[in-house]
Amino acid sequence: LSQLYGPLNWLGTYYRMIQQSFIDMENMFELLDESHEIKDIPDARRIAVSTGKIEFRNVNFHYEESKKILKNISFVVPPGQTFALVGHSGSGKSTIIRLLFRFYDVVSGQILIDGQDISLVQQESLRQQIGVVPQDTVLFNANILYNIRYGNVDATDKQVEEAADNADIHERILSFPDGYNTVVGERGLKLSGGEKQRVAIARTILKNPQIVLLDEATSALDTKTERNIQTSLERVCENRTTIIVAHRLSTIIHAHQILVMKEGEVVERGTHDELLQLNGFYADMWHQQLTKKEEGTDDKNGVLNS
Ligand code: ADP
Ligand code: MG
Image (cartoon, rainbow, N blue to C red):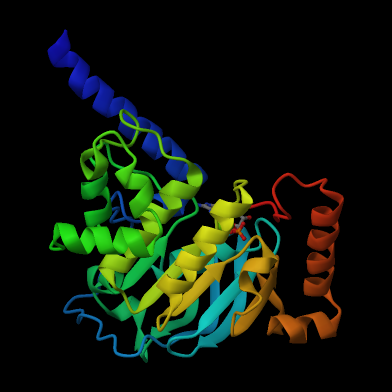
């Protein structure tokens, strides 16, 4: 029986992981090397990323013919800048992230990184250049050292610890029963949402990509955790081209540009101040979040749902 238990337990874990993936696809980015229906063209080159400039040119996309999801999306993220996507649930923010990671190919239009159409390069080379901090990080049933080193399997123990320190989770790990050797995940020590997110940030720091995609957690975090994550996020975004899907608008006040999405379309764009002056959709969302925070009616700290 014990021989059976191992594989069954393993299956159970994967079943839950797969189940979750339907809920939140980006969880799986780094875990399952899903080949999907995306195929590289014959003789595809490796992408050559230099500065990490991102460009969407008239991108249209749907999952099913009957429902258009992205309608003519165009934007440019200059190298090293932080770009934010906001909008209500279902407006297409995560889809933009999935397309950039080439989970799907666009229906029409182009996505370019440093001038190269990502549908024409080897997807594996593309994914090597992009770090993802997903909404909810799934950990391996392995020790925390392994879980962080996953960002760069060649990293030394010291480098892993430095990354953890930069992600503000080093001290916490030292307080675990076996320090860096503590097993985490489904069958080990359970980490909080904020801790898992910091593990993802540490992985990304180790991976050291030119481009970072970040889907902010929607779950409630306490104020201190929130502040710590904010600081480590700033570190991971520094000098990298970053796209943040933000639920708390307070996260992106300093973004170079904010794209406001509604039902697959861009309805407004600009900096936080410009958008407030516009007094439109973004300004409404901003005032709504402020009100909720002041009233204390929102236990999620002014979070847009998903
Ligand atoms: P957001 O991140 O802004 O909440 P998404 O990009 O996740 O929005 O989703 C945009 C729309 O696409 C939603 O209407 C959603 O139901 C739909 N959608 C997302 N993933 C799939 C999928 N795999 N198949 C079909 N429809 C999907
Ligand atoms: Mg989303």
